[in-house]
Length: 223
Image 1 (cartoon, rainbow, N blue to C red):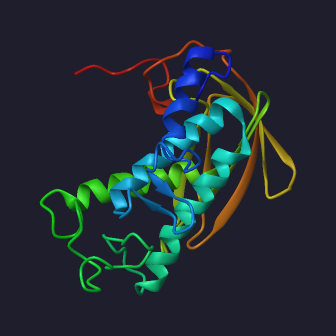
Image 2 (cartoon, rainbow, N blue to C red; image 1 turned 180 degrees about the horizontal axis):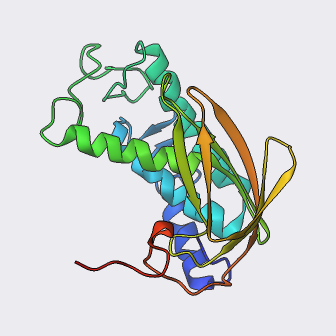
């Protein structure tokens, strides 16, 4: 997670996110009216979402959170409009296949590209992860978890920081009773097709950073 006390990193986060806010006429990278990046749009541009998420985590300013909701929401609407299939090219006016005679596939790094599937999947994944964090403060993080499988229960591990540097004090689900954690992670089991809103208390930067995953227990195994 971002260290909100690091002034230089905060400035960098604001700067890079600012390239796509659409507020600066000298940097016309994003059209807020049609929710389109670079005058025409493709799914790999969802990789921009983590830039906004970083700025949001550093500053807590709503403008970055609103951008994420707006842009990710636009892609969700496009998928719905296209019969549940991700279109890989959006024209300058926000229309699917606008520059390809209405054809929804064949865009840059899209369905027909050699590495398009991997690149689109990666962009979709990081955008979805960024969109799930709704609040981050010194003492609390709020996030939403969703199980998209209609048939399988999923177990999700939630870690307190990329390197285990924070501690969860407890977690509350959907305004229910708080459950004590006092550790670097907790696990949630999601029923098929379910969603849960979590609010987790935190102590930040109170643990030694480590590359070990929670299941490594005493240390990282070597082969």
